[in-house]
Amino acid sequence: MIPRILLYTGKGGVGKTTSAASTAVLAAEAGQRTLVMSTDAAHSLGDAFAVPVGAEPTVVAENLWVQHVDTQDRFETSWLEIQGYLHSMLAALGVDPITADELTIIPGFDEVLALLELRKHVQAGSWDLIVVDCAPSAETLRLLALPEALGWYMNKLFGHQRRLVRAFGPVLSKATGVPMPRDDVFQALERLHGELSEVHEFLTAAESNVRMVLTPEQVVVAEARRLLTTLSLYGFRVDAIIANRIFPPSEDPWLQRWGQAQTEILAHVRESFGEVTLWTSLYRDDEPVGVDALRQFGEDLYDGGRPWELSSTQSPMTVERTEAGAVLSVQLPFAAKTDVDLARHGEELVVTVGSYRRLLALPGALARQKVVAARVENQRLQVRFEAQDGSDAAAEGGPNDD
Image 1: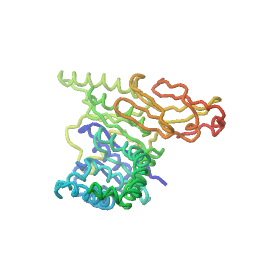
Image 2 (image 1 turned 90 degrees about the vertical axis):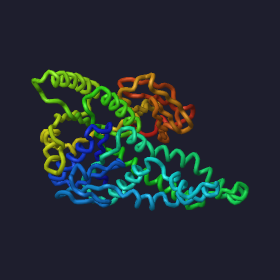
Image 3 (image 1 turned 90 degrees about the horizontal axis):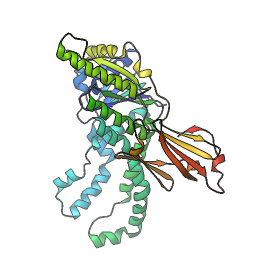
Image 4 (image 1 turned 135 degrees about the vertical axis):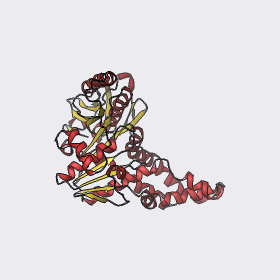
């Protein structure tokens, strides 16, 4: 059984760590066995709770554990074989060992290893709720898109390369002087791909939701709009937005102007983000540090509610059967028609929104049909499929979530 998973993300400095930590405190005090962990390389959860936090889950209150992932340990179990091959290849090309060490560590790989740690906790079944303090927006998007991107390379590239290496590896190695990857290297890549695919599956399941944290500033809100569009493109359910650092009413003219500007921005947020729940938090004169302060912050933010129970169960992508075939619908909030590009490549649909691209592996029934029309309407991309001559695909199945 998948535990409830909440991911908190947003532009750097908007208060996502405080929001994530306060949610975990409230859930734990309500009896939920809760783990709060970070995928951000700049771990700050320990600072938020004002306690030393180690590589294993650390108890900070009843029913509440905090963890800073030991990426070195995960690195040794998930990347060591691959790094060993890259080392030997670089050595054959004359690269010194110290430089080779630097070249074989992928930027951002710490966050990938933190996701693998999350997978371990999900499989253990020890938690009712896992709260994830994610890296800032851009890093989070790259991270969440990684499993599908790696899957494409595994399916399209490594399968062919593995067969070539098996057939011609000794000849190629002798001719080039560069060692060919052994079978255990391919096995390590396949294992990593499989583990990340599992992470993607449970992060896009109904039990998981993303919370976007922002401050009422035009630049921050603009980034949040793009973030919501891209999260929906990749299949993640966004169920709430948290607006932090709102100025309280004041007699001071300077603060009044700021307050008026924030009020206008928040009205725009409420209008444009539609049915997504919006929580707001006033600007505080102190920083919430420690369990008691985080509890108070959470009670003020959620107004006595139970935020860990809120859930958006509707998938951003659905398939609906029609008389002629089917309609694939992908939710793309704030995306204009000119932002979206669509292409068909075999059994995949290539959807590009701005600078982000997703390869959608079509279900079996749709893969046997042809695309006859596509449009962006009511913040959704709708792609209409029809059965090709002689195909019985239109008669298969009923309405379902993909």
